[in-house]
Image (cartoon, rainbow, N blue to C red; front, side, top):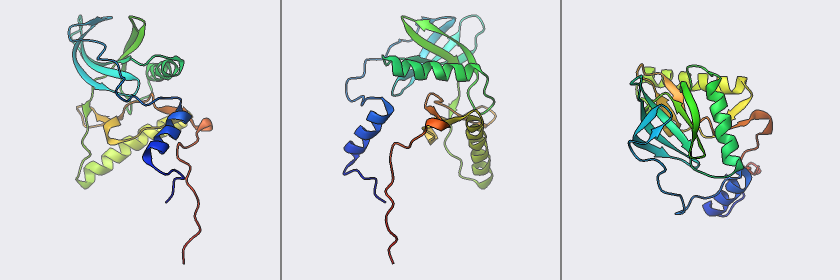
Amino acid sequence: MSTGFDDSDELLAAYLAESGEEDLGEGAPPRLWEDGREVGEWTVTGFLARGGGSEVYCAKHRRLDTRAALKVLWRDGEGPRARFDKESRFMMGNPGPSFPAFYGAGMEDGRPWVAMELLDEFPPPSDDRGVARYLLDVGEGVATLHARGWLHRDIKPGNILRREDGHAVLADSEQKNPLSAYSPPVRLQRLPAEP
Protein backbone atom coordinates (compact mmCIF):
# COMPACT_ATOMS: atom_id res chain seq x y z
CA MET A 1 0.00 0.00 0.00
CA SER A 2 1.37 3.39 -0.97
CA THR A 3 0.58 6.61 0.87
CA GLY A 4 2.03 8.84 -1.87
CA PHE A 5 4.79 10.06 0.49
CA ASP A 6 8.47 9.14 0.31
CA ASP A 7 9.19 9.02 4.04
CA SER A 8 7.66 9.44 7.48
CA ASP A 9 8.94 13.03 7.87
CA GLU A 10 7.08 14.06 4.72
CA LEU A 11 3.94 12.25 5.93
CA LEU A 12 4.14 13.98 9.36
CA ALA A 13 4.63 17.39 7.73
CA ALA A 14 1.57 16.83 5.50
CA TYR A 15 -0.55 15.77 8.50
CA LEU A 16 0.56 18.73 10.61
CA ALA A 17 -0.11 21.16 7.75
CA GLU A 18 -3.63 19.77 7.29
CA SER A 19 -4.44 19.64 11.01
CA GLY A 20 -3.13 23.13 11.79
CA GLU A 21 -0.78 21.70 14.44
CA GLU A 22 2.96 21.91 14.58
CA ASP A 23 5.71 19.47 15.49
CA LEU A 24 6.61 19.83 19.18
CA GLY A 25 10.24 18.87 18.70
CA GLU A 26 12.44 19.96 21.57
CA GLY A 27 10.69 23.33 21.98
CA ALA A 28 7.84 22.34 24.30
CA PRO A 29 7.72 24.51 27.44
CA PRO A 30 8.47 23.01 30.86
CA ARG A 31 5.67 21.62 33.03
CA LEU A 32 3.12 24.36 33.83
CA TRP A 33 2.08 23.41 37.36
CA GLU A 34 3.99 21.99 40.32
CA ASP A 35 2.58 19.79 43.07
CA GLY A 36 0.74 21.85 45.69
CA ARG A 37 -0.51 24.42 43.16
CA GLU A 38 -4.08 25.52 43.88
CA VAL A 39 -6.34 25.64 40.83
CA GLY A 40 -9.92 26.63 41.56
CA GLU A 41 -11.08 24.30 44.35
CA TRP A 42 -8.38 21.75 43.44
CA THR A 43 -4.82 21.14 44.63
CA VAL A 44 -2.38 19.56 42.17
CA THR A 45 -0.91 16.35 43.61
CA GLY A 46 1.04 14.99 40.64
CA PHE A 47 1.81 15.13 36.94
CA LEU A 48 0.17 12.49 34.73
CA ALA A 49 0.85 13.22 31.06
CA ARG A 50 1.58 15.76 28.35
CA GLY A 51 0.02 15.73 24.90
CA GLY A 52 0.22 17.87 21.80
CA GLY A 53 -1.58 20.78 23.40
CA SER A 54 -2.47 19.91 26.98
CA GLU A 55 -1.04 18.59 30.22
CA VAL A 56 -2.93 16.38 32.66
CA TYR A 57 -2.42 16.44 36.42
CA CYS A 58 -3.79 14.47 39.33
CA ALA A 59 -5.60 16.75 41.79
CA LYS A 60 -7.59 16.63 45.00
CA HIS A 61 -10.65 18.75 45.78
CA ARG A 62 -9.82 20.73 48.91
CA ARG A 63 -13.32 20.65 50.43
CA LEU A 64 -14.80 17.38 49.17
CA ASP A 65 -11.63 15.27 49.36
CA THR A 66 -12.26 13.75 45.90
CA ARG A 67 -9.62 13.11 43.26
CA ALA A 68 -9.73 14.24 39.64
CA ALA A 69 -7.69 14.68 36.51
CA LEU A 70 -7.02 18.35 35.69
CA LYS A 71 -6.34 19.02 32.04
CA VAL A 72 -4.79 22.39 31.19
CA LEU A 73 -4.04 23.87 27.78
CA TRP A 74 -0.34 24.68 27.47
CA ARG A 75 -0.23 25.42 23.73
CA ASP A 76 -0.96 29.00 22.67
CA GLY A 77 -3.04 30.00 19.66
CA GLU A 78 -6.63 30.19 18.51
CA GLY A 79 -6.76 26.65 17.06
CA PRO A 80 -5.62 24.80 20.20
CA ARG A 81 -7.88 27.01 22.36
CA ALA A 82 -10.90 26.34 20.14
CA ARG A 83 -10.29 22.55 20.31
CA PHE A 84 -9.84 22.67 24.09
CA ASP A 85 -13.04 24.69 24.55
CA LYS A 86 -14.92 22.29 22.24
CA GLU A 87 -13.77 19.33 24.35
CA SER A 88 -14.82 21.11 27.57
CA ARG A 89 -18.30 21.84 26.18
CA PHE A 90 -18.61 18.24 24.97
CA MET A 91 -17.75 16.88 28.44
CA MET A 92 -19.96 19.43 30.19
CA GLY A 93 -22.89 18.16 28.09
CA ASN A 94 -22.69 14.80 29.92
CA PRO A 95 -22.01 12.60 26.87
CA GLY A 96 -22.57 9.41 28.87
CA PRO A 97 -20.70 6.53 30.49
CA SER A 98 -18.21 6.07 27.64
CA PHE A 99 -16.44 9.35 28.49
CA PRO A 100 -14.88 10.82 31.66
CA ALA A 101 -17.34 12.57 33.98
CA PHE A 102 -17.08 16.38 33.99
CA TYR A 103 -16.40 18.04 37.36
CA GLY A 104 -15.76 21.67 36.44
CA ALA A 105 -13.71 24.14 34.44
CA GLY A 106 -12.03 27.50 34.81
CA MET A 107 -9.08 29.72 33.98
CA GLU A 108 -5.72 29.87 35.73
CA ASP A 109 -3.08 32.41 34.65
CA GLY A 110 -4.93 32.91 31.38
CA ARG A 111 -5.01 29.18 30.59
CA PRO A 112 -8.23 27.15 30.48
CA TRP A 113 -8.49 23.97 32.50
CA VAL A 114 -11.08 21.27 32.98
CA ALA A 115 -11.52 18.89 35.93
CA MET A 116 -12.73 15.40 35.06
CA GLU A 117 -13.02 11.93 36.43
CA LEU A 118 -9.62 10.39 37.20
CA LEU A 119 -9.36 7.06 35.40
CA ASP A 120 -6.79 4.29 35.25
CA GLU A 121 -4.78 3.16 32.26
CA PHE A 122 -6.35 0.15 30.60
CA PRO A 123 -4.05 -2.54 29.30
CA PRO A 124 -6.10 -4.32 26.64
CA PRO A 125 -7.48 -7.60 28.00
CA SER A 126 -6.31 -10.95 26.64
CA ASP A 127 -9.23 -13.24 27.51
CA ASP A 128 -12.16 -13.58 25.08
CA ARG A 129 -14.81 -12.21 27.45
CA GLY A 130 -12.60 -9.25 28.43
CA VAL A 131 -11.81 -8.42 24.78
CA ALA A 132 -15.52 -8.53 23.91
CA ARG A 133 -16.45 -6.20 26.82
CA TYR A 134 -13.57 -3.84 25.91
CA LEU A 135 -14.65 -3.63 22.25
CA LEU A 136 -18.32 -3.15 23.19
CA ASP A 137 -17.44 -0.31 25.58
CA VAL A 138 -15.24 1.42 22.99
CA GLY A 139 -17.90 0.86 20.32
CA GLU A 140 -20.53 2.52 22.53
CA GLY A 141 -18.29 5.59 22.83
CA VAL A 142 -17.71 5.72 19.08
CA ALA A 143 -21.44 5.31 18.43
CA THR A 144 -22.18 8.19 20.84
CA LEU A 145 -19.74 10.44 19.00
CA HIS A 146 -21.14 9.48 15.60
CA ALA A 147 -24.71 10.03 16.78
CA ARG A 148 -23.69 13.58 17.73
CA GLY A 149 -22.01 14.06 14.35
CA TRP A 150 -18.40 13.72 15.54
CA LEU A 151 -15.44 11.52 14.64
CA HIS A 152 -12.69 10.70 17.19
CA ARG A 153 -9.33 11.20 15.47
CA ASP A 154 -7.07 9.37 17.88
CA ILE A 155 -8.50 6.08 19.14
CA LYS A 156 -5.60 4.02 20.48
CA PRO A 157 -4.91 1.98 23.62
CA GLY A 158 -3.40 5.02 25.38
CA ASN A 159 -6.68 6.94 24.93
CA ILE A 160 -8.82 4.14 26.34
CA LEU A 161 -8.95 4.29 30.14
CA ARG A 162 -10.98 2.34 32.66
CA ARG A 163 -13.18 2.91 35.65
CA GLU A 164 -12.86 0.90 38.86
CA ASP A 165 -15.74 -1.30 37.65
CA GLY A 166 -13.71 -2.21 34.53
CA HIS A 167 -15.77 -0.14 32.04
CA ALA A 168 -13.62 1.16 29.15
CA VAL A 169 -13.81 4.94 28.65
CA LEU A 170 -12.71 6.99 25.61
CA ALA A 171 -10.38 9.82 26.57
CA ASP A 172 -8.88 12.73 24.64
CA SER A 173 -12.16 13.80 23.09
CA GLU A 174 -10.35 17.00 22.06
CA GLN A 175 -9.22 14.95 19.06
CA LYS A 176 -12.52 14.89 17.22
CA ASN A 177 -13.86 16.48 14.06
CA PRO A 178 -17.32 16.94 12.61
CA LEU A 179 -18.09 13.93 10.41
CA SER A 180 -19.18 16.31 7.65
CA ALA A 181 -15.73 17.93 7.55
CA TYR A 182 -13.68 14.75 7.77
CA SER A 183 -10.89 14.12 5.33
CA PRO A 184 -8.26 11.56 6.23
CA PRO A 185 -4.72 12.88 6.86
CA VAL A 186 -3.35 10.16 4.58
CA ARG A 187 -4.85 9.73 1.16
CA LEU A 188 -4.48 6.20 -0.09
CA GLN A 189 -3.58 5.56 -3.69
CA ARG A 190 -5.63 2.92 -5.52
CA LEU A 191 -3.31 0.48 -7.27
CA PRO A 192 -4.33 -1.94 -10.01
CA ALA A 193 -4.80 -5.52 -8.83
CA GLU A 194 -1.92 -7.82 -9.63
CA PRO A 195 -2.68 -11.13 -11.40
